[in-house]
Image (cartoon, rainbow, N blue to C red; front, side, top):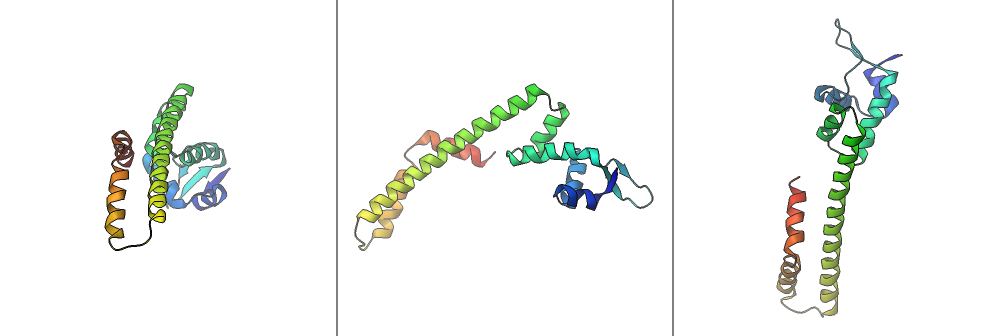
Length: 148
């Protein structure tokens, strides 16, 4: 059963704009395009492919990653490899966030223990620099993640 792009978008809870993007990137092309008016039609069977794309997006995969998986026909080996890479990336982020929370806790403890006095802003600034520069490896990992 063919659905107009708006109907398919509404039914699948994605935007028409997202479907246009998926088509442009080669992730999900319409089943049919009317040559006289350019209307795009999707087959209800394409819902499976769209759900696959949405599932990988929810896991944090980029559209480029999903396109790579599709190029490999979502092979088990390719999916396992990408999932393992994503898990490693998430583990690094968790480690960095835990480190940041520890620094925040230490800074708060230090600042809350001291009574307010002149120069406390400068002390807080110096303290934050010390805590942030304490662990070079995590700082390096953090900068790697920021530039992914």
